[in-house]
Structure formats: structure tokens, C-alpha cells
Image 1: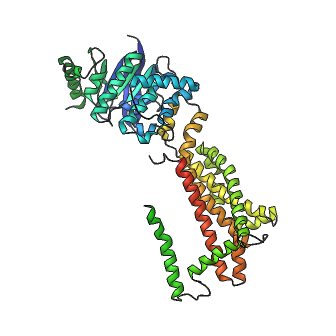
Image 2: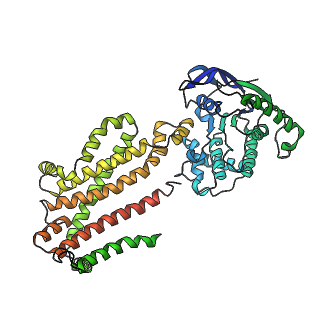
Length: 249
Length: 247
């Protein structure tokens, strides 16, 4: 396998609480890897360390060909990461503006992504005029507009109702199949993990270790129908069994 | 909700009218509100108070503009770094807490008995309010948005221009409104001292000395109306610029 992200013997603690102690993990290039684990297992901390937001205490990590312009991170709290003074269009365009792209290039790229998402809103309006689900889609599009090689997603669906949740999963799959980025997805929800990921990494409680990595052979695109198949349930059962161990349930 | 905003002025005038008509206060010192209002109307129509109005308004506008042009960039610059702001914090807070009018004699020494000294002291004190509020707005910007932009690879200048500047605006506008009010206060007070034949402050003190109490009240009322309207004007501008605030 080609590694896109490698974590070796990572150490991190907060006020004497050890979150990571010799934690290692490899993420395969061009795949969706879901990270699944009990609350407080340091899932968000991991993404924050990898993206340079918080410092590590020891060990090392490496993201292949890391470059800010080819990397995106979708935060859990989309309401605080969208810019309310910018229109929806300007929000999606922000990363390209940062990269110094020309107006016509920005317009072209945004239109291309709009087509892929088939997402109809008034682009000259502001995020506060949209529903929570629509705002999350705008936040997604903002992260994807740069066509990143590596994409971190922290519980993107947790604030959405089920319908919007399913819709966004479909968009994400469509994007993934078109551009094949490496995606690291944190989720609380087994169904989401099994629906989207090639691999599901189940983490233990603190100090965090990888308990099990479960391969998910279901073929893409995974329709809603695939959620009802026997194969889906088998993978889901495996993840649940691993999680039971993790959470001592 | 708008209709409720009329309750305040009605109550004020009603209380004033009751106190005046029941002669709770000597009518020499407190004329009837309607007489005062019609006196103000007469002064405006006759035009005798217009030069005072224009002089005061002009001084306020000039000092506010100076405060804005210096204070806004200074506040944005200081707010960029908490260390930088903390280094200047004492100076800003000290002069912000010193009554501006206490410094007027000093400004008279430097600028002479001219309009310049009045405008300078008003501009100085209201500038500090703009600096303080703008810097605070920048320093207290939501970290999550700055972080998101950093991850996108934004430079410091881009973060400042596209995120921090906008984040600071709500607090900046609070500063602007306090600053224009303070400008008016300082200008009116300094007009009462020396160095000008025109201005609402001059008019108030002159009519007090000559016991034209009705004119004095009319001029006070005019000063209040100006302050209120300036505030309202800024508020309307704020609503337009900050349509996104709190959403």
C-alpha cells in the first residue's frame, strides 16, 4: 500500500492525562479511512496534531507531499468556520482567493463543483440565510474547491438531520470517486463509517491505541440500497464487536 | 417594536410638563417644554441659532474624522499582536480615563486660543476610544475562523484583510458611536470656555449669563438632538455594513 499519512509512536498529553502514548497509524493513499472510537479517545486531537493546529509531545508523523493548498480540513462546527460577511459564493471561493487564482478561474472552478454537487441555493445570498444542512454543504464545497489530495473531516454529519446526512454522504462519495483524494473521516456513527469508508480504524479509550482495522470490501458507489445488504451488516457487526471491546460495554 | 421607541420621549416631555405646570420648580428656572420647543423652532426659523449649529456640527465632524482616520488604522495595527497592545495599553487606558476637558488648557497652550485646540482635544479623546475598541475587536476575533484560513494556507496579510478586519467591525462600530458622542460633549464644553463667538456651547453659556433661560434650554435641547441624530445615523450605517452580525 502507498502511505499518504504515517504516524509513528505519537505522544500527547493534556494536563497529565495521556491521550497518545506510542500511537502509530498508517493511512492508505486514495482511500477513505474512518476513525471510530469512544468519546475522549482523541480522534479530534489526532486530526489537530496532524494538521499542525496543536503540537505533539513526541514521536513523529508525516503527510506525503503536504502542502496547505492541497489539504483541507472540515471542522465539526461549520457555523463558526463559514464567514458570515461573505456571500455563499465568496465563501466557497475563499481558498482559491488565498491561492491567488484569477476571478475567471475561480468562477469556473466553483461552477464545476456546483454541477457535481447539484446543489441549488442562491449563491449571492449569505450563509445565515441558509438552513444548517445547507451551510454544511457550503462548508464542504469550500473544502473541496481546491481539489485537495488529503482531506480531514471531523464529524461532518453530526449536526444534520437524517435526510441531509444521507444527501451529503452521497455528494462526498461522488466527489471521492471523481478526484480520489485520501480522506480521513472521524465519526461517531457506525452506519456512516461503514457506508463511506474503505477501512474503519477502531480506537481504544485513553491512552489511545488502534484496537482493530476493519476492511470494508463493499464496492462504490454505495447506494442507499447497499445499506440494506447482508455484506453491509457483516462489516457493521465487526465494527460493533470491536467497539464493544474498546468501550468495555 | 418601533412604536415603543416613542414612549421614551413622550414620558420625558410629560414629566417635564407636569413639573413645570405644577410649579414644582420655579418657572424661571424650568420653562414649559412646549414653550421651549417652540422657542427652539423660532430660533431655527429665524436662523439666529443656525451659525451656532453649523459651527458645532462642523467641529464635531472634523474631530470625528481625524479620530477615525488615525484611530482606525492604529487600532487595527495594535490589535494584530497582543504583546504590542499590552505594551501600549497603559498609555491608552490612562488618557482614556483622564477627562478630556482637563487637558483642554494644555491644548490651548499648544494650539492657542483657536478652533484648532477645540478640535484637537475632541479628536484626541475620541480617537482613543476608536483605538481601544478596534484593537479589542481584532484581538478577540473568533479563533476558529483564523485557524480555518491558516489551514488553507493564508498569509498573515490575507488573514488580516479577509478575516480579522471583518471580525473587528462590530466592536469598531461600538467605538465609533461612543466616539462621536464624546466628540460632541468635548466640543460643546470647550465652546463654553474661550476662543469662539459661535457654537451651541457658547450659546448655552451666553444665555445662562444673560438669564435667557428659555434660549438656554432650547440650545441644550438642540445639542441633545444633534447627539441623538448622529448616533442614529451611525447606527443605520452599522446595520447596513454589519447585516451579518450575530447571525
